[in-house]
Length: 209
Image (tube, rainbow, N blue to C red; front, side, top):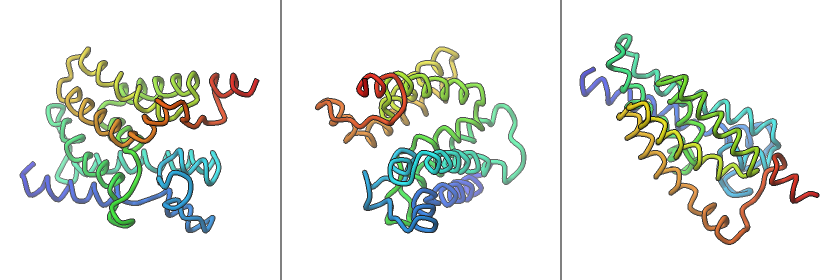
């Protein structure tokens, strides 16, 4: 892939990733602006809190999908060989940035979790399954999406190092730092004991008993 081809693919991935599904669904079907409701985030968690968990799950799937579609922009110029699979993430980063800094809504967006996982699905489906298992089990224990997200990215970084996929290790480590940065308000609430729980999981049920 030439530099010009890469830049075109990256830009198209950004445009796909920048589609603010949470914002669009909220405005179009519920006449609610997620940018000024709840946490002001357009990702899964705030969508679920404002519009309900069914809608939140729909938005999560759409955000994962746009990450996958963004990664597949690497194939515009022909199929990739095994040695070129790194291009899925190199191009898919455009979708991740688009989701986080969407020009449609003033360069605001989500926290890069679902869209990053969508790119991972194309790059390494088995690692995608592991990421979902880690996220799901951590969410079940803690009832906190923020904790599940940060733990998931951290452990995927370690798992990538264990299988000696150094490119994925570098990308996962970088995304882990980025995800922690995007969750800095959540980290502050965790430190003060005020992080919000979702109505599911052991921690939530313990607080209800």
